[in-house]
Length: 451
Image (cartoon, rainbow, N blue to C red; front, side, top):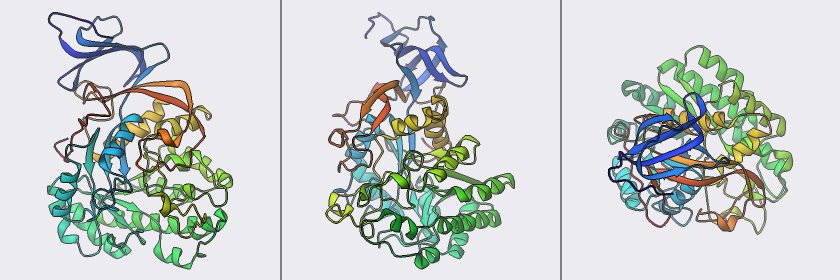
């Protein structure tokens, strides 16, 4: 509702019984001016603003989510996804900041010129704030410092074929060379950790049998690659981040590395926390991703890794494609594109799985907002705190809905969650104190060190 005043102190005031602040959910009033949180007071303080939003008893206020693993694919493969469609989906799902991956766009973001092309493509069509990762590929070691100086948040590499020809993969020795370069300026390397040789020796995937596909991407391949990342980070002192961990077998070595002081962080994704291999129907290629969705017992160990802090964050790995690339006509896991689209649904997916395990919403928000923000160095994102950007989400944790792919803002409405009942509904998303209007892009392009 709107509250008229002659001389409002603030642009926006949000009042509610359950506002997520540093001490947990508390009755608070949040005052916002010029896009930033200026004050947080106990409920009843009577803050005055040009607009006042009163939360209902069913609603909570949480910080906007930060998703540091999103494949937007523009320019070059905009028919897979694009900045407008991806950021609409993000806003609808309570995500107020994304960091875009350097591959699946053409050209990939492996030099400053390509970064400039991507920023030009994104300009004036983003509905949330957008940052960019650079890429580390064979032959571009000399470009890494220039990309860093141009404002990328870090560098992504693969340790096996990336799925697209224009983004090559690094051998472990090449990874170490690049890590030594990054250590000179404290850059961050984020790694798709599956071992190429182990994959080469695994059975080839083919046909509709999900079990055959799962056997083609064994846990051992992931474990070997994670071990390489750990040891190369240990030798160089560089910061390294393991992307989309799916193998719970790797958790003990990750714990050990962190205990030893290796500068290592780890993420997992909603699909690894909510889905299980035993439930994937044969031919249902909308479930295909790499590394794959593994067994239910593995899933539960990933939850344990989150709860004990071994896994740092939960991000989407939103990796969309067109329907034909998913090979729905044949259901052949061997040829289908490997990627899950969940950018709009991530909060509800994880919250649905968390509440059945007795995990509080505050922990979920920490994994999906504060922790990814810290990973990327986004110091004004990820919390409802004075001095932070006023990126806020009104969320109804006890509401429920059934996923209708036609209602998603993703360019290609393909999802393994179709017809699935989920808990938690995003009611309103605010970006820097303004309610996101999905017809008027108002997001900003972020630069490391200036965001």
